[in-house]
Structures are given as C-alpha cells and as structure tokens.
Amino acid sequence: MSLLGSLTPAQFLSEHWQKQPLLVRQAIPGFRGFLGPAELAKLASQRDVVARTVTDTGQRGARRFRLDEGPFKRLDVARVPAERWTLLVQGIEQHFDAGWELLQRFSFVPHARVDDLMVSWARPGGSVGPHFDLYDVFLLQGSGRRRWQISTDGDLACIDDADVRVLQRFVPREEWVLEPGDMLYLPPKVGHHGVAVASDEECMTWSIGFSAPAHEQLVHNFLAFLGLEARGEGMYEDPDLQEQERPGDVVDATVARVERALEELRWDQERVATFTGRLLTGPKDSVVFAAPSKPLDVAAFAKRLAGEGKLGLARCSRMLFRGERVFLNGEEYAVAGSLKIALQALADRRSVSLPVAVDDDEVGLLHGWHLRGWIVVG
Image 1: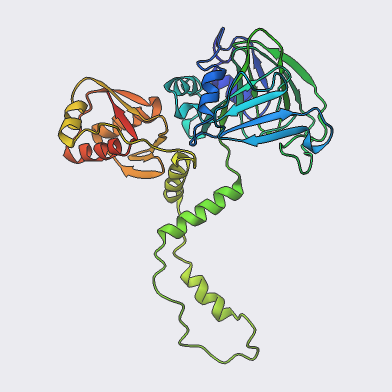
Image 2: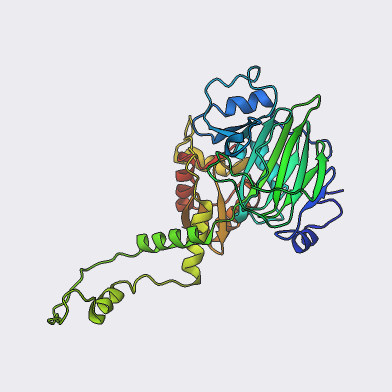
C-alpha cells in the first residue's frame, strides 16, 4: 500500500484531484506525527506563528463556535477545556524539518501549489463546525481518532455573523472514523465536519493544504506587479487642448492621452511567468527569517560548498524554477551551468549533496542567501 492506497499518482490526479473525495486506510501505517499537545501549545505562544482555538459552546445560532486568535501566552495543556475545544497551528513546516519531510511525500502535486502543513489538537467532541474549504486538502490522522462526515450536495451557504465560517445546512452523505495513519482527501468546496472521538490518545489531525489564489487576488497582485515594473515617466500633457462645449465632459482626446500613458502596462507569457514565480515563493506575513548566529565569511562559505555535506533551503524558504531562472522567497535570479542544475534539484528536493561547483560570482550570490538566512550549509 502507498500513500494513495492502490492508486498511482497519475490515477489519483486523473480520478480524484479537484473532482471527488478519497479515503485511504493506513496511507502512512501507524502514523502519529512528530508533535504532541505540549509542543503544539508551546509553538502557539510564538509571535511568528499563526494559531487559533475554536470552542464549541453548545449554544444555538451564530455564536456556537467561538474563535480566539493567537499567539497564546503560557497555554497550559493541563488547563484547557476537557472537551469541545480545538487548537489549530499553521505553518508547521516553518519550524520543523520533519514538516517538510512529510510534505515531500505529496510531491506528486507540484511544489508551486503547496500552502502549508497545519496541525489541529482537539479534545473529545472538539470541532470547528461543518464547513468547506476553497483549496485541496489531505487530512492525515495522527494520534487519536476523528469522525469525518462529508456532504456533496453543493449547498455552501454559511451562517451570517459567526466567528467561524459554518454551513447553515449540512446533510452528511458519507461518514468515516479515521484511525492513526488513515487519510481523507477533499477537493475544494466539499462540505465536511470533523469531530474528535474520545479515546486513550489525544486527537491530532495533520492537514496538508494546497494554495488556490482567487482570480480577484491574482488580478490585483498582477496589476500591482506591472505597476512596480513600469517607470511611468513623464506627465499628462495636452498642448493641443481645445475649448470644449461642455467643460464637464470627459472627451475622447482626454481618454486617448491616458490610454497612451498606460500602454507600458503590457505583458507576455514570460512576464506572467516571472510574476507567478515571485508570487508563489513570496513569504507569508508571519514568516521571519533568522540570520545565522555564526555567519561564514565568503572564503569559509566557498570552502564549505567545495566540501562534503548538504546545501539546503531554510525551513521558511520557498524555491521554484523556470528554465534558467530561479525564484526564491519572492525574488528572481538568472542562473546557468552547474549552479542551475544544483538549484533546480534544490527546488525539487529542498536539499542537495555537496560539493557544488560554482564560480566567484555564484559564490557571492549563495553567500548573500546564507547571510539572509535563506539557505543552510552543513
């Protein structure tokens, strides 16, 4: 059995990806994760971590599920509610190498689509309510058990004025209880409801999410990108201005002058590719890069590249490539030769074996990334 059960990645992408749910028993046999409640609670206290709790109050109406945003100072696992309570922490991969190792298992989906790894810890009865997501997600059960119900009737109306986006009407069509190592894949807009089942172990669910930016977001970001690239030199001029019969009228001549000023905002496929690479590797607002505590000078860094060991991406770094361009943390770089080969492999696997053959200019580029805390050598 593989991560996808009896399916090959090609079969999964053809038959299920963005089409229909898939339940896989023992996708990772006996998986229980690499974090427990205490470690997760400690992580939720950090300022650079996105964390929240959801409490099912048991009341009727919009306020049934109460949302509290982190960070949470001194979250004591011994004092949290005994039931109907959930802690969710996003971006686990930014803090643990094991997070990226888990995400690498899903490399049959391009890295450009990866969003993050989220972990939820739920006490018995804990839930975030029946809801839907706008992105693809794999729900991998760690310790404990969780009951999942799904609805495919397409009714996505949500309760108004609620802390948590909860479906107004949720009629389950299928139901399963997931044990450690079981996994449920859900395409976007599939209603689902997960509730922690009382057991001897705490319920820990690991969510592998894939980004899906809205078209509106893409358009706004792209126009901003074009605006940053356009110099916009000169000023509006109309030396041929003529008296208008109606001074309040925006005449064709005025519109034509503005249109000429905007002609620089043009694009082709490669300009869109540049925007895409920079957008998809851009750090999230919560990301903080840590410079090395003992940075290497250029000579020592070059010696390290020529020796044995590994060159790897820092946990918060995102890298993609297109031809002879590499995109790293929202920036674009032209690369060639052996460096291109090494960085393409780095984008694929997040670490490569040393030595890496590079010239002086390329050492300078990599050394700059080292000083910014974007890559690590060891």
